[in-house]
Image 1 (cartoon, rainbow, N blue to C red):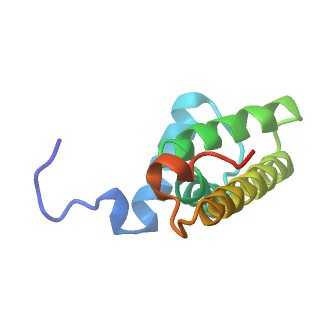
Image 2 (cartoon, rainbow, N blue to C red):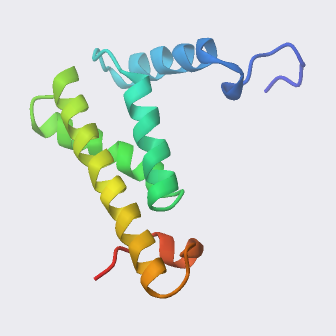
Length: 116
């Protein structure tokens, strides 16, 4: 581990993330072109619409679902779209439940639960 200040960090920009993805794909034997923007958007939606730990778990499930459907880039996009739509519905239901309870902000304990 380097403590040098000139070493790029993950949050710095795309090049470090691109290098990481390339290294991880090589290590795992994956040849699929990864649309990182789609997956990062999905992770954001899951983290904000459901709960923070939902982000990595959802992206894992999307990868698994895509693999079961043939494993190509289109399957990844389709699975990511479905999961993002679910996260959006989940968040909207939680917000409605919070409003129905007289609280416009359902808070962390209620934000991850759909109404019903």
